[in-house]
Image (cartoon, rainbow, N blue to C red; front, side, top):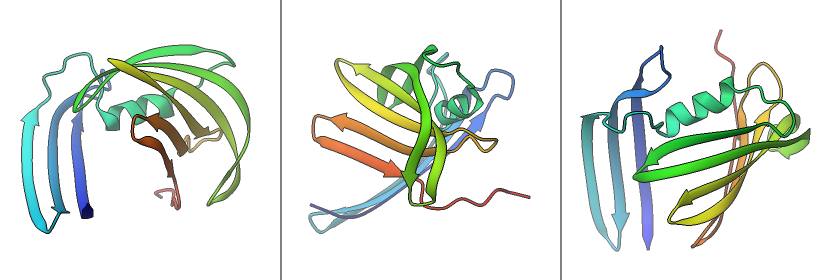
Length: 151
């Protein structure tokens, strides 16, 4: 069983294409009493593919019409083909209160496909408020619990 884990990804982004140029990863994990840590910096070689940072940037820049579709290639350990559909707009309950949001239904494919629902704030901040993903291990939910707009 994992006792604790730390993972940080830093990305240098090409401002013309919005794609990664370089990534730096730092991690530490304690598993069954053994502590492992490491660091890796490398040039981004998955040309035309996003990483998790640039994927979120792409989502924040996207202002879809209802039922608009988008397909994206994302690399996070392996290559994923992600199909997105802006399915509806409404209020979503979050730890930050009820927020106007765009519901984005996703199908994530890499061999076996799995569904996800992303809630993006429907305001000038364009925050990723909530993500629900069905994986082979079970449902994973992530929520934004705080945000302070930079001055």
